[in-house]
Length: 368
Image (cartoon, rainbow, N blue to C red; front, side, top):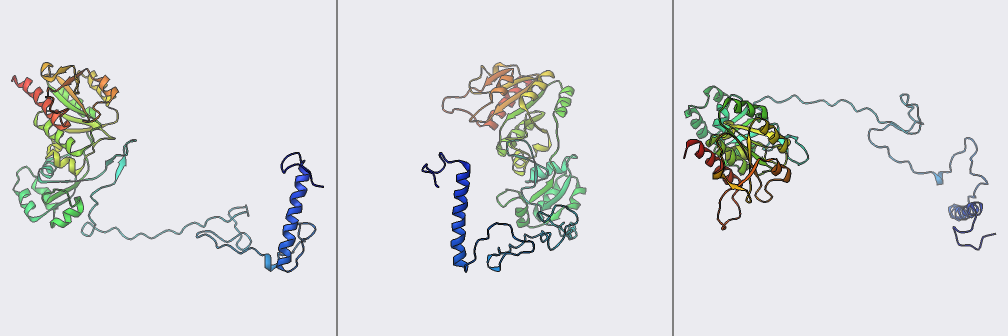
């Protein structure tokens, strides 16, 4: 007898079980009548050897690629469990022989890189440098390894006429048309008919400290998350022109060594150290231990640069135009200075600000 209570309330477990069995039996009987009058057996256990009627057989599902048939058709001797089939080991794939240097395709304009932290940027393992000045400086740098050198006939003549270029390395150059160089470095790159495939030079902070020990006066420029390669390249160019020893930047959320950066540096990338570090605040602490005076540049600085002695070991720290220096970096500086500009502009471009700071230091050293 059914309970008067709503389903799920006031009914014991046996009543619920009985009701479910009644409903399933009624459903089975209806479907059996439609299928030809097959009646529900009194219990669910089939006699040994009994097979499901053809009408009620489940359709066989196709096997997934790489899997054996079930244990009933193909015994699996490796795995003892017969519950599911195991994947078959893939056959070795034959690899075509690697093409020689004559037939090798040009490396892509965006070479593969290794990840460099949480910022999404990468440090390239190989890079195309392009532009006459950038390539000439790279060829003259003994630390550079030339992987490929492409040049148009006109550009090759200029390289042969340049006394700073080791002529021996030009024997490895490939004379091509401009479309081949466009394909290598990108069609919008201003390559001037010459491009060089190489690896970035691995400079370290220790190299900068060694330079400082050997010089009476030393200057470095530190960049806090400056990510535009044209700005960073311009800063490297100014640093080399105004006697700085290194440009230090982050290895994430910052510009890496690329063709665009090298082109903007106009050869200076191979004349001073370009160092990528993980933590700017910790690097500032190391420089302080080696007697560097660390000056951050901000619009609200305490003093103007002309009122600060910049003749010794100096590290200038610059941030992005929008956000400036991050809090911890700013607090790590010995002093925050400003550049005197009029109210007509809120700030200077970071590469221009770096050039002004480097010039003021050079002016003080020269006694101007």
